[in-house]
Length: 317
Ligand SMILES: NC(=[NH2+])NCCC[C@H](N)C(=O)O
Ligand SMILES: [Mn+2]
Ligand SMILES: [Mn+2]
Image (cartoon, rainbow, N blue to C red; front, top):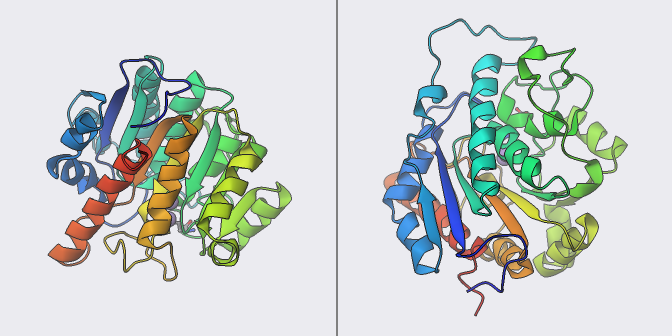
């Protein structure tokens, strides 16, 4: 079991939020991720680690997750902006409800646009928190730079309040506060960055450990450097996009990119963060059970499950 936790209340409780949402990207199926994880036995896993579980049902947010039929035309390039805004706003409230009770919030996606909600909710409770983003992608496109218009490629820019995301420029997302500071954000696993994103990452001096750095220094050193960079005292929000893993390890995901983290590297990250005793919020995003053969799906769901267990302290003896 994990060392005594620095920020959570006892009895240690995991607040599980299932968020079956796919509106931040074009491929159907990623909305089935949470239910697959739950049905595979995730809640029992978590209880077996000694946590109480606070779970309101996989459909907690269901009424918000699909369009109610009102028109949602593109705003500039952005697709389904009003739907994404509505769902993530409600998710932020749910995550905050768990966090403010001293629970470790675990959000099961769904696509990565959901991080607009999870990070907003976590940082409302822990304004000094750090964000560790594990991904092949930086997801830091703004409404002005996004090549695809898919909002799962944009959540970080809204959280930082980058140009193009202000209330004046896009009132539809006016509820999002720029809670994140560039120096409290760190990436691990990057290997597919758009030109506009590269410019933003440079301009704001954002710490990035790409796959190049993982190869060069090894995952152990990379995680140490990442934790040093964001500060050794802060609560941690870990946002884990399974496409950070190599497609041979986690094939069932919508935007797979070759050359990713190995099984052990991915799990090591969650273990090392569990070891800090400062994890307050975890996202497991972008598992798409309708992509790939049955075995690929099983393999990917099972990895999502073991990542949660490791982040919650399973392998710390
Ligand atoms: N969460 C993800 N899988 N994001 C992929 C983003 C891909 C690309 N950078 C885009 O903005 O469209
Ligand atoms: Mn990604
Ligand atoms: Mn992502």
